[in-house]
Length: 321
Length: 236
Image 1 (tube, rainbow over the protein chains, first blue to last red):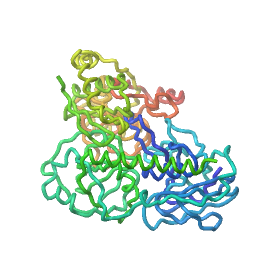
Image 2 (cartoon, rainbow over the protein chains, first blue to last red):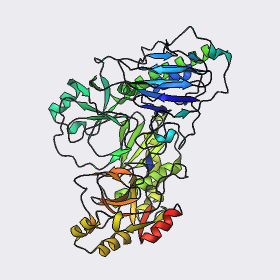
Image 3 (cartoon, rainbow over the protein chains, first blue to last red):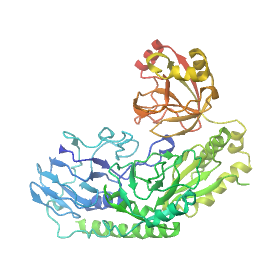
Image 4 (cartoon, one colour):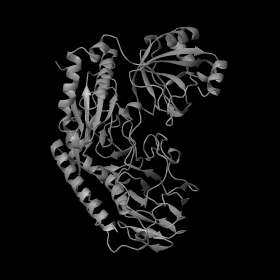
């Protein structure tokens, strides 16, 4: 069991999401930075689909009742166990009764804490991912609050989790914060409906993440964009990564808790390979876009998949007794 | 002959477009195509989600290459053979029919007066008008299990409220523009509230989790406050 002493700004259980229910108005949710969640679980010897805690900007304080092992990935965050600073991107043993304290991120927006064996919460509609916006999922479909108790699987308390490893993962390919590196944008259905100058601004301008951003979507301040003519659009299916243009002229980039349908003009779709970078943008961060073809986006996605497969296989080999 | 377009949406998603507006015939084709694709069990497909004029198909991106052709073949077969797709277009449909009891009036209907005045009818006429039509679930969205129902009599069309409510009670039956819908749980909302159903529209512990599915036919049955209470106590 893990006792939540202090919940942090917004800490939620997130797995690989809840696919297959879009026709009932139920979105997929799941970790915003998927590779970071998967790597955290791999470091704990968990299956790829296990859920982790998604931590936003400011972390929780947790007391762990049983001996276990945890791993932290994603945005860098101060990480202490019983007051002693701990490394991230590596498995870390936690003695029974210890307190895990996570601080405040100075860059990036989301970190992932996985625990050996995974969180033993009952899936809702086949998934342990929380959808805060839909009030759906374990923990009553809400973020952690003080006093919550999270069951963890403790059957596998083998010796290896008590000893500290001497290796860690190079975080650089999995957490990059380079404002000069734009997000790749696939063309949206209404990209051509933008005025010429708006289309130019979309790819030459710099946007800023607005404070009113969350797992539903990131609001982007910056060049005002407008369509050349009024579009009559009825609601159509939406996905995370969709860049919509509401009447305000300020685009919204959808996140994992986005609505399953919407009727604003669609100016682009952020390449899947760049969604983890979208996940790590915090209010005030700069965002730029570069046009990308489907072929190139798929190629980049395949490359990342291969790198992630290799990494998780290497981690599994290291953890093998 | 193919009468839909395939629009790439993302590495793992396509949009099948059957038209552009909100239209009963287009909607019927969307639902027929959704059923045809569901029963075809094409490899890699994860979500088949109807909207008014389009069908979202989400799939495992590793299986994406062959999918547009497989989808086209599946739907072409349906349209050409006049099978389920043809049958639905001509009005015969395998959709389920659901009756939804609604208590109109009083505390459940804060916007009934506004609809009455707009329509130039008596409250009883508005209730009769709303509860005699047969509606089609065009899509579910906004929140889990929220049905967008087509088939509202033109006399009852009403714009959304200028000031949306921050809390609309669960079960509220409402009118928004040319549509009517039901709030599955307490939510913020701008539609005009004309009644309330004691039925539970969304329960993740139930299989299926939603009372209504896309393409279903819906009728409302006017009930009084006593029956509302009885149904609500029974857990409806």
